[in-house]
Every structure is written in structure tokens, then in C-alpha cells.
Image (cartoon, rainbow over all chains, first blue to last red; front, top):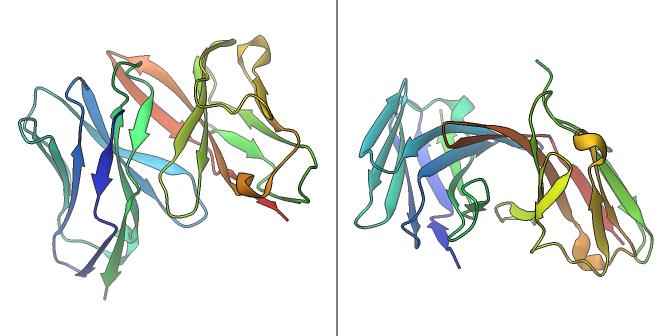
Length: 113
Length: 115
């Protein structure tokens, strides 16, 4: 089945850029998603990218997709302490509905002042 | 616009007891999902509804878990009897499909502790 891998931790200083990486195994996905989870809360959709795109920019967020290597990344520019959270990469399950998402284990981003 | 509402937020029960979780999705969202999130893990899909029909319940442990979505709006997820390994956060999400994009909106979750 589909497998989504992320590094578990990332620590940056306030004002620096953060880059969170994700690799996945299946190539039939049409849209790939990034979610954010703050402590005690549900997941919040941050952004998504269509699989025929290489890059998508949305304010401080930049998503890069390398479809050949099945690698997805999320860059947060000018990282703030409020960006501290767990970030999840999610891709549709292989052979299933595009609405059935497989999530990575999440990358915990810590932003130091 | 109100978000996805879940209740209760927290539940502590003894093993072998039953428990139920309730979800009210965003108005107009036809698709409803139940996920389980274990500590340190990403959410795992348990069941997906399109209106009142369960279209994917392959990951739902049917010997003890059941779900329903009456009239295609609210949904209830039940566990009977609960086991220690069921301790987790149960998340409900809803979405509408726009041009192939499933923007899922999540509720705050119900944290279940089984003792």
C-alpha cells in the first residue's frame, strides 16, 4: 500500500526558512496536501499542489514537487513562533478514491525566538 | 461558517465498556470521514461516507466498531466493547469536492482513554 515518510523533527530560529520534506511511494495521486496540527486541535489544511505542477506559492508557503523522485516539500519563509506545530504530508491512497488520504507521521516544527 | 463539531472532547472509560462519538460536519459537505490518530502518528482513515452511504470502511474493525450517518448529516462512531489499544484521538472531517480537490476540514477530535 501507499507509504508516506517524513522526518520527525525540525528546529529553526525565528525569521529563518523552514523546509519540511516528504516522500511517497505511489504515483497515481492527482493532488498532494499539507496539513498543520497545533496541540489539542484537529488538522488544518495549509495548501495543496496538483501533480502536474512543480511548484506552488501561497504567501509564505512554497510547495515543491519532484514527481520523478516522489518527493514533496513545504517551505515556510520567515518562520514565526506561531508556526510551531506538527506538519503532515498527505497523498491519496493508491487505487482508492482521491479523497482517501494517507498521512505521514508528521514533522514537529519547533521555532526558537 | 461553523466548523466541524465533535463531542465529547474527552472520554475516559474502563475496558469492555461501550463508547460513542458524535460528529456534525460543515453544512453542505456530502463527504464525512472518521479517522483514528494514535500518539505520534498521522491520522488513519476508519470510514468514509458519501451522503449516508459508507463507501469505504475497509479499515474499520467491524467486530467492535460501528458507524452510522443518518440522513446524510450527523454521524456517530461507536466502540463496543472498548479495548486498551483503542486509546487514541478520534477525528471527524468533512469535505466537498471542487474540481477534483478534496479539501478536508477536521474537527478538534475526541481523546479517548481506555483504562
